[in-house]
Amino acid sequence: MKYSLIALPFIALQFGAQAQEKLPFTLTGDIKGLPNRYVYLSYAEGDKEYRTDSALSKNGQFTFSGKLVQPVEGRLYLDKNAAMYGEGDMASFFMEAASMKLTSATGRLKEAKLIGSKSQLDQDLLTAARAPVQKKLQPLSDAFNKLNKEYIAAIRAKKPEATLESYKTKLDKLKDQMEPYYEAMEKTDKAFVTRHPNAYVSAQLLRFRVSNMPLQEGEAFYAKMSPAMQQSVDGLEIRKELDGLRAGSPGSPAHEFTKTDINGKSISLAEFKGKYVMLDFWASWCGPCRKGNPHLKELYSKYSAKGFEIIGISDDDSNHEAWKKAVNQDGIGIWRHVLRGLDWSKREKNLPNPEDVSDYYGIHSLPTKILIDPNGVIIGRYGGGGEDDEAMNKKLKEIFGA
Image (cartoon, rainbow, N blue to C red):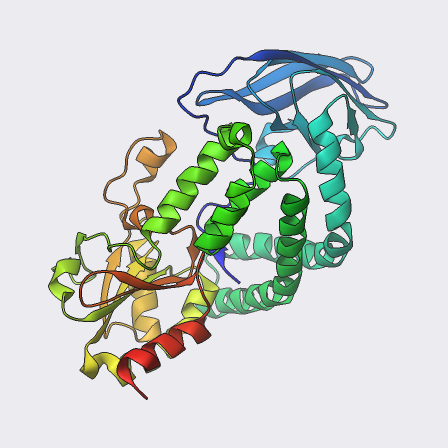
């Protein structure tokens, strides 16, 4: 199972720099049994603009109005704090510049239906296609979320390390059980995008899938989109993701960086010219990364004397102690280690973060490994947007022999 570097229940879309006309929408609600209270609507409405609006519901009826440059995903909820974590009663739907109505006969937003949006009809088709897999996945997902809350509570209560490890073992087991269903969901999503290349639902779906696809597959999906869809908000983001992925894919020159390693010493990729270098993008909190470390140690032991080096690039910028502890526990201090250089304060303000190595290699999920040849050219990508470990083993065997 791969870990996404950014996993949020609702992500504000960043719009392209091109000016786009905003058109008005109206959303009325008729939620039978809803108490008189404020309801909240969140959505992206323009260039770097993310809006949260409120309306007072009286006898279950309310109205929102605003302007949109294109269909976007909206979220209606009652509790701001719960919604931040994807919890509580809420409705998610595709809004567009039209007169729309949201209705529910049960008083629950989660069971509300939206009419008046053509894009929501596409979303309904996708939801129906996903339903058989979602039905099997949901019990495991619920169990994981419940156990994860217990784990977080145990951390806050400063429970013994053995107790925390027990939680992590159980959580990893649940992740492994969910993986086949995630793979099935991915196939369902790709089939939908293939059938509906110019649906806004497909564009948003592809926006968050493309970074984990092989470059050629992502480019093929993008090529099937109309020019207008390619210039849409999500189309521009897909192009950006593909360009980033290309920079970290075979045939591209490896971005050269200089960092301070885990021991406080300077390290530069340029120092390794003349050798084959594997950049291992990982994190202390990434279960699959940690599980793969014994195999990496085997490869390093087997090929290091033949000119093979590994540089670990960790996504632990916010927790240096966890990073150092993981390196020691897994016995991987035999190769060099640095942090990726993520500055969350800059990321949150949408400012450039030139020290973030991951950005230069199109890294969006962990683990991902980049293989660089003695001339500084990328010759392999394994993990997010690349091949699997079997292909990595085969490539190293071709280079170094048995």
